[in-house]
Length: 215
Image 1 (cartoon, rainbow, N blue to C red):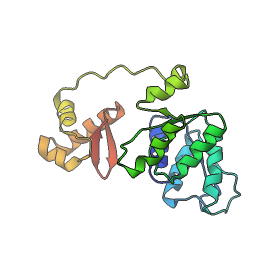
Image 2 (cartoon, rainbow, N blue to C red):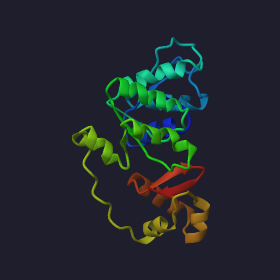
Image 3 (spheres, rainbow, N blue to C red):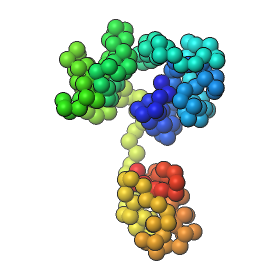
Image 4 (cartoon, helix red, strand yellow):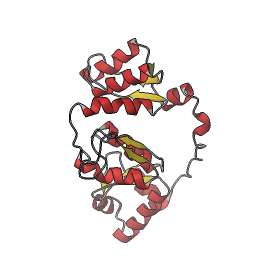
């Protein structure tokens, strides 16, 4: 789908590593019908990156509640496996998982705390034969996808000088550029150049608002 949360994160993460992804909608595929409207740009990114946005509904169709459970059968049917990351007991993700089971597809789930209602659905899937997914390798091994994965990149060399100081100062929640300038006493133009180089090397990432994180 194209919903907020895991749907959007999955598409964005795939696109960030130059992957291709498919969004199956419960609305028409025309921009005016796509919901949420904030993800229209994401839909465009999916298409321009070689993926696709598909729907069985004609353009101009708005999203009615009944459309989304029906849409889930397409999600399950177009994949070799379905992963449910988090789901309460009434989550629509469980409908997708049931379709996948009915179609003879693999179903994976991320186990969660038994005290969390957001894990009620995922934990229940374990009782009906879903495979626990504790790491990406649990999925790739079960589906024999190892040969499709790119070789692991060699680790980047240790950074010294300005680059090393920047990396050491960055956290995982986002550090503003002006704070880096002040903390490291680095001229703004030099900091900007170093951040650009580090981002191209895949060491740091711009998360918007002038904030950077280590990758």
